Length: 114
Image (cartoon, rainbow, N blue to C red; front, side, top):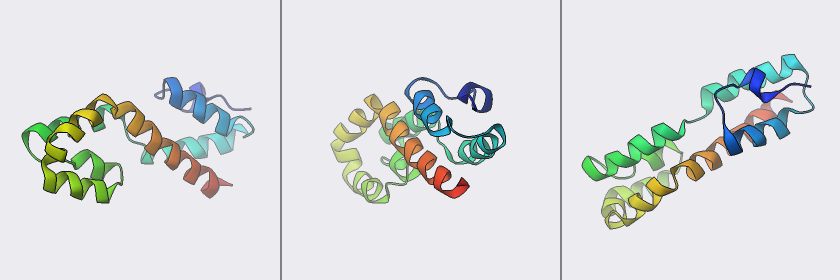
């Protein structure tokens, strides 16, 4: 039984609990394979926060493109982050947005590994 802290020490909080539930029945070798692929595809909450802050200065919606939400990214781009209100909401919820993306990626990796 693999432990998430051994294979993915950089994850914290809610993401750690979620990943631990996914890899609890894996052997160590499979868990390491999962960790390598997942680590390459996951996004850091700090990256989403920084690119969200760029919405105030440069171009709104960059963080949505990074999270794979192209439609929302285009909407933010053309509306100035929904008049900056959407950008402010996304800055407050950047960890939730990142967790949702990372959990989707983790599920895809699990399917690919098995």
